[in-house]
Length: 632
Image 1 (tube, helix red, strand yellow):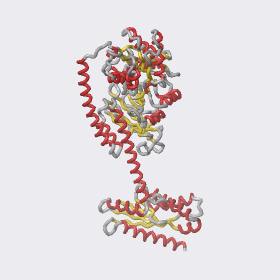
Image 2 (cartoon, rainbow, N blue to C red):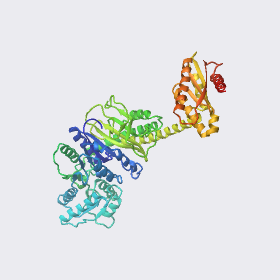
Image 3 (cartoon, rainbow, N blue to C red):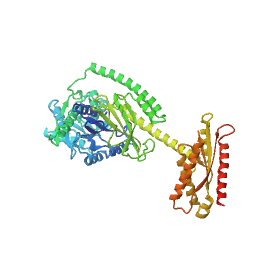
Image 4 (cartoon, helix red, strand yellow):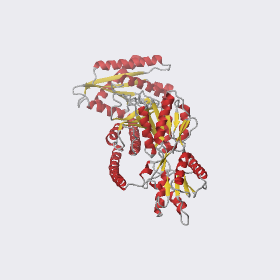
């Protein structure tokens, strides 16, 4: 894990979006005060409005989450919009986690629950319109009826209207989408030609309220003079919109702090109720007429927005330049340097790490394409800006170990994100921030850029590997793995050119004895086995010391730079000793033997490698003839 401190894991989606940023900051503050690390598993979800290519494969990260290593888990079910991910996470948590689990956005069976009281929130805002503004004709824009929060708020509206003695359906109920896309239809539903405009419209969340305000203004209506509009949830955007929304605060900050406190109390042995409800609070704004915007404040806000827009332009330019740079790197170390140099616009961070998966052969996901996680990972990218990893050794660890262990033991805030490109799994990234806040939206751009760069690097590595394999095929003997004639000539020429002046080299020729007899008597397959056995002996004797090749059916060449007579004598003894050992241990109906010739000389224009081979071949043939003479 990160260090020796206990860690609390948060499962959420898009921590930079809306209320989640403040929720995360509140969790961080509470956890650090109590001495815990915080680990956010931050899923991204759909990119833009419709691209599911990224979210379709985020679920694979779940397989390497070390659930049992955490001392507490906070589960934000409402934020996760990836199909099937909630069920997958819940099943894994129940199977593997041994710590208290707190659900903070919806009731989850088997977990501790901190629930916002939606019924009380809807009741609070409808009664405000009824009591404070005297509204009796109230419409409702609900969330989608397939969404449990949409259903819950729909029934809460009807219950409050009935309790006030008003028609349950009010001035009509329009089914929205919890987003901006159905506002035009809703405006036509409530304020179309020939329809009596409601006095107020309650929207089941702030995003629909803002969109409805815009569409009603497009129809020439004034808010709140002609119609009062309220939202729900207390989203940050609603408090920056004009008119500023009247809404219900979901009290995310309080929920976050209570979740950390609940886990801390349980770990200390204190009993806690399985379900606690958080009471809502009303936020009064301009959209119902309870407040009025201050022109001076709004002017300053517009100026701030202009500054922000200019900064965004610079940031985008930086990212475009960095993207071009990062997609032409030729190694992971270059990619690491590029990230360290360019990735400075998503917030202050202490360290950034990309853990790439490692297979059973020790290859990382940058060397071999992977479509599923493995149980081991390696810190292929590690940018340490504050010395948190000072003196650590980069090495392969298990995914249960999660991250390299920091050299310091202070509470840390870490955000984990899946690193993948399509269905290609690379691993996961972690970023540790300097303060209690999350990074900004540009972090996702960097993650996507890195993922694409890693895919490019993998493809480049695969091409290089293919070229290397093709090259090996052209210079290697298929039967023995030694160099073929072409490979021997190329490598021995290179070695001779690099020799020191006045130094001597040796060429050797080794020829198998009796191969024709083995082929004729026992077959060519057996002859190949005999050749391979002799090649293995040659490879063992000369490995790392010489260039060896099979240059004919039963003929082998060896070139040794910086060689002496004593070395040649030793090589000869080793070869014949290993041949003798092989024959003694073999159950074959034949023995292997070979003849040996060598020539040592200084490499000069008169004595190149080819000349040494010619002389060595003559000496090998002379030895072979002597053996034949002795046998006769």
